[in-house]
Amino acid sequence: MSVTWRHLPAPAREIADAASDAVEAAKTQDPEGYEAAAGRLATAERSGLVLGAVVRLLLEESHPDGLDSHDVRQVLQRCVRAAAAWRPDVDPHVVLVLLAGALGVYDSGEDDSPPDPAALARHAPLLVADLLTVTGRPVDGYLSAAFAEIERTERHD
Image 1: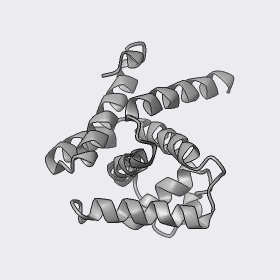
Image 2: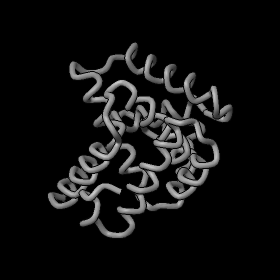
Image 3: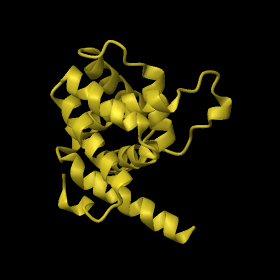
Image 4: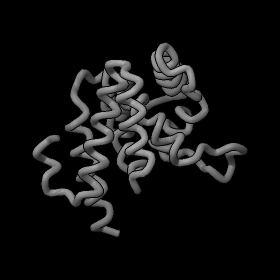
């Protein structure tokens, strides 16, 4: 675990640890490790907020000029294709919801079948791992930045 997470409360450290483990398992296509880590994320309160912030940060870095619909489609297709090779249960709709949510354009009220938080937690590390292939950096820095951003936002609200 990164030393930058030591100051965080235990629930936040658990999210960081589970997310890091899940992303690493996704990168190495380790089904057992992924299930265990994604299961921890699914039960961790606010893991979706943290992973959504990580996805947004990764999208911003990998698309500094912004994203258009073609970019979103490419990210979605790349992620789903890569994950389907070892996770046949990957759901493109859930990945699309994660992308739209990270971009702030998803409204669950307009979705006929919004994914539940457990499905989002089980798909988010797949998306994060895919986006990390573009940036070439480890997830730790993005997790630290996401926690710092969430803390700043909550302090100002």
